[in-house]
Length: 72
Image (cartoon, rainbow, N blue to C red; front, side, top):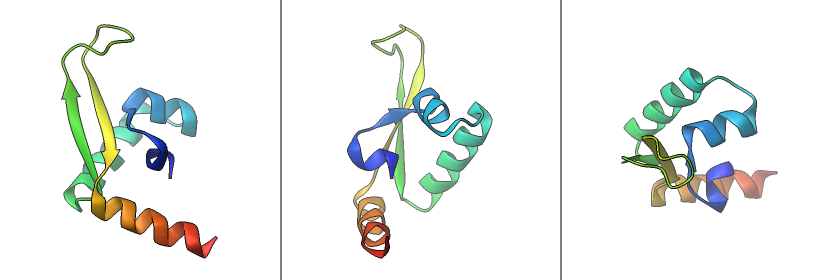
């Protein structure tokens, strides 16, 4: 649901969910296999200049997020 608003990096997701980086990375990679998210590699992130991974919902992921929102 976090990704509905805007793309986030692994670190931003980690901080928002209070979990560890490896868990975020592994879960995002699995969601990418199901074509629910797309992961883009950023060579130099604008905020810190380091390489990072930008995660955003795909159209399929957005459809599922909307269905989950309706069930709440």
